[in-house]
Length: 211
Image (cartoon, rainbow, N blue to C red; front, side, top):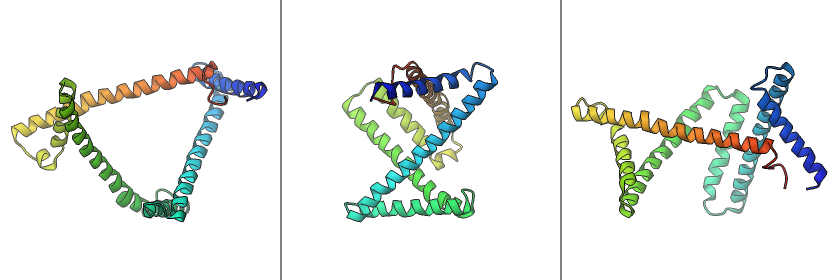
């Protein structure tokens, strides 16, 4: 990249970052309006990136269909449903009962099935972890997973036994205290990482817009 174009992109990136950052600390109308405009542009760029990703996904699977590579039938199913939902959403809108029907009775069951498979995979991975390394952390992971899985069974939830009640309380304690604390810690780490990355871009240390 030439130095002139590099300097232009550096100025644009640093200037936009400083304006958006100042908009949260300085109550100046001009800065606030500039921040709103930049945020709207960012939303448009993000939507464009998502659209380009969908186009790329369509092209990849269409290429698999045209060449009839291995498991091309799954690519055909994906393309058909993608086009169907796109056309229905554009014609009737996302709140139409036909669109909601496909979402409720096709997409939602598939997502729930994937989550169920993920739970089983985690249990199997926990058993393999215990077989290879039997320490306190692996035992705690496996025990917590079993308590949460058993505590969510329908016949366990509807029971009035004292043991089942204690199991339900233990499950609630694990999911509402430890799991929530871990999730908040992860989100806090992501937020700090994003803030650090943004500051590095503003200061010109990281340059994702050029070589």
